[in-house]
Length: 139
Length: 171
Image (cartoon, rainbow over all chains, first blue to last red; front, side):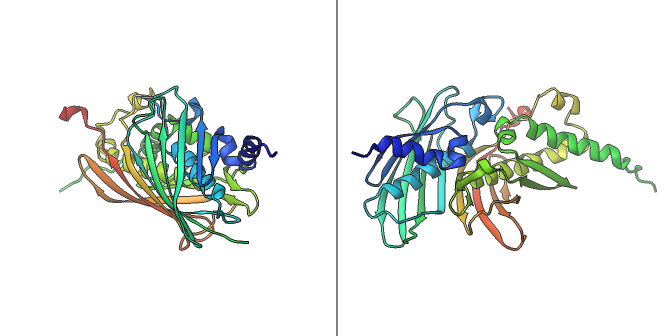
């Protein structure tokens, strides 16, 4: 039996930028992915409020969307972000871990359409949401 | 007929560089990412020097899309803040001493950010410039693009909307 979570953590370690931001998988299943990132003072974007930079949240959402594409039953050999739109609903609460959840809601031979949401401890109100189109690169 | 004597060049440069530095150096994430900001007159060029930790796909290798998005957002935010500070900075209404003590003007907040990945980000330095589509009292729309080797071949571009900080004197 293959240990999925071990593969997932190795996948992240193989992505230097995701590893640098300390991302860890929560879940990986058939076109969906859950990915989390701990609060880190080095990621602060607003020194006055200590809120994490939107850029770090973008990186989390982008990685999460890409991972969802790769776990899809019809996954391509490789994928790359074509476009990604992020809506920032509110600042993430300082000190809290940020969790992102992505799903592929439609896939063609050429394109994967993905959406994702990111939360802090308050799982009712997203910190940010994303929608994107990803390339399908077949071997 | 006489106009006031222009300020000495070093005074002008020192003031502008100090304001830009104060704006940027207090943001931990920008230091973490290694972002730099180069100024020529009022034009700001952001630089993301290459670093192995910016890689997203080690096989190609290619820059992480998230790193590029973060770079564009930082550029948009700094250029937008910088442009709103320009007038107060040049008129002397902005106190340099206060800025250097860390009393910074509030930053705009990102409402949304839409990134268009045009080409693979290569493992080398990136540069970005932003232009303001509209900069209003409450909202702003900013276009930003980044390139690597050739200015005419951007590898990623974005449009973002921002909520402007409310000025203290209007409260």
